[in-house]
Amino acid sequence: MAAPLTASALPRALACPASCALPAVSSTSDEAERGTQVHAFMQAIADGTPVDEALAAVAEATRALCAKINLAHVPRGGETEVAMAWDVDARRARRLEVDGHRQYEPTATEIPGTADLVLWLDRPVVIDWKTTSHDFDARSAVPQLEHYALCVANIAWADEVECAVGVIADDGAVEWSRWRMDAAALDRAADRARRVWERVQSARAHQGEHDVTLGNHCRYCPSWRACPAHVRAVRQLAAGEVPAITAESIGAAYSVARAVEKSAEAVREGIKRFVSEHGPVKTGNQLVSLNKRGALSLRTL
Image (tube, rainbow, N blue to C red; front, side, top):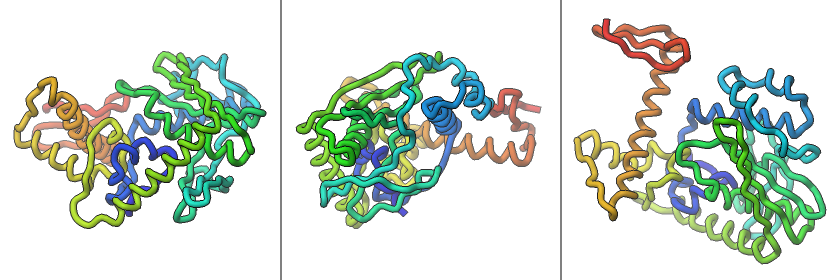
């Protein structure tokens, strides 16, 4: 089954519509779990939960990071987890009732999504939290936030909406990116939603090998196991075909490296789950186990 086209998938679908057409596999990782825990903490703070209580509810592995977050500029009094959908045909939005896992039931022409926080002011504010990774670019969140703004503007009958992305660094600092969307910008967001939706429908109707594009958008792609470009990249490096690094090829070479890293990460996560469930595993003259920090360890006996 293909991954759904949602607001959070818009940046990826813009770069590679096939990512919403290829068979998808649900998965998780330590990084994804960290992001989930940080989002839950920020939601609790925005809802007015005392800091000590919010920290106590966070998984121990993420608690130290949450304790360092600078909460001075975190808005209170807004509405958290606002689920909405934009109908690309009717050009209108509606509120959605969803469970805590963001399971949507949109119509065939709707693109759903859940904003982390909305301030329903005369000029509404849409806020999204992001946790940093070594190559995170806040600009990648723009289509997602602007889709939320489009929905909020339509629901609230607002002519202007402010978008804000709070990027949470490992030291707890929160770096903000803010911009306003007027009526013209909202119209462009509606046009973009329609364009992406049409491209995804075309990719889903396609027969044969999909035209795919490697890049940073692959990082959280649920369809990477079925991606022909990803499979080719892994096979090339497995066969010792290391890409030449030149000014012209460096972007493609980096995408290949990221593709292989994603496969390696999936293998490590699988091994880690197995060892967590079954305990240390002896294989030949080696022992695979977890150290005190919960990281994988391989040692020769």
